[in-house]
Length: 116
Image (cartoon, rainbow, N blue to C red; front, side):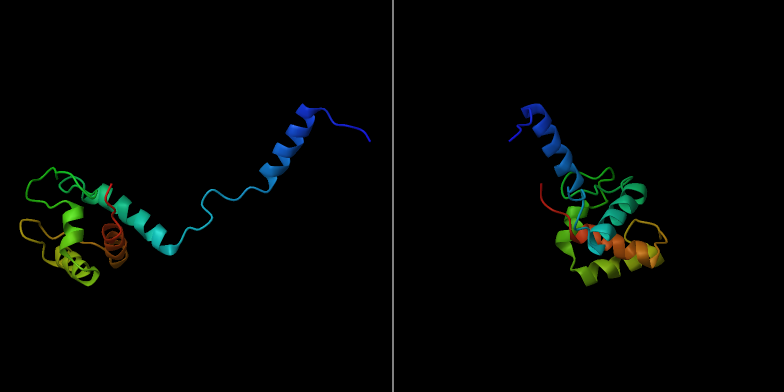
């Protein structure tokens, strides 16, 4: 029986395992995608005043951090508040049109914030 040199054997094993490796994100769900879009929306449209993470201070002291918003509203209540922001504003916040898809994505992001 012929023996393969160890370096050649290792190279063959590594190259074979690379061919059958799993994708980096094998289990991405629609909720994951919505949460990611919601984060991007928050970063682009909300972070100027709000702390968009779970904790920390907002740039505008009157703008609650998203973690506080998460703890204050149910999913239904949060969606109602986002509707109000879109249509008439909210407290000191001027109306800011938010599409239905963006509202759903933003609500999904806020609902899924985690403590660090």
